Image (cartoon, one colour):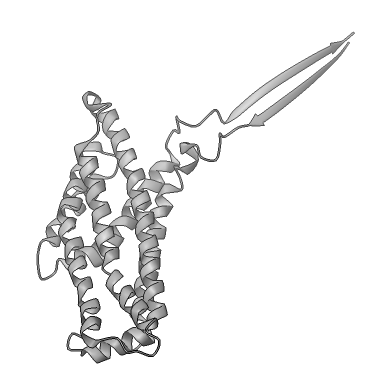
Amino acid sequence: MIEDSARTTTTHRGPWYAEGRWTHLAPILGIFAVVLWLAGVILVESGSNSPNSDATGEQIVQYFEENAVKLILGGLVFAVGSALFIAFLAHLRARLEEARDRTHAGDRGYPSPLGTTFFTTGVATVLFASAAFAPQIAGAITADETDGVTMAPGSAETFWNLGDGFFVLAQAMLFVFFLSAALAFLRSRFLPSWLGWVSLALGVLAVIAPIGWAALVFGVPLWTLAVAAFMWVRSRGRDDRMAPPAERTTTTTRTVT
């Protein structure tokens, strides 16, 4: 009697768009966002003859004309980084609500006001921060397309100073953003509690007028990197319940007499 046995293993991880496939990639979005923010700022700041606070309109016109490409590319790169940050926040919000449902069963199935506030104020913050580059982009485009006609100094001054208003609005969003983030972190326990307290401290820093800018310029990127790092650690050990079975095994036995 001869017994033949065959074992077939089929690996199936679901379609490319399955949520489980993106679990480990979501934290990388936050890291890429910070990298693009930094690259965008470096491009803009690398321009020659950057005007100071006492610069005349003529000097600003010259700056726009000489650095049009850097200003446009820098602003666009920064905006792409903000888009990645929004995607990162969306994933973080989903993970926070999952963790909240596990720790507070009575809230299961209901949208989280904290999560909604956290996400929307985060989106508003990066949109205003990106918009701070828009007037300089507009000034650079205008200066580049004048075809030998010099831009009016008054218009150049308007383009140059208008971005400060968007920066102030971005800073104004930070207090509510970091406060809601702190409460969401402490309530869901998805991330270490100390990260919630750090978020609260950054929110307080944002409303201190002389130094509040530091919460936006330094606090948001460093906060993003820290949250992304802990999300990566959590995703490595997360049981991906939404993915299809990873493996299917079939055994065939044939008996010959």
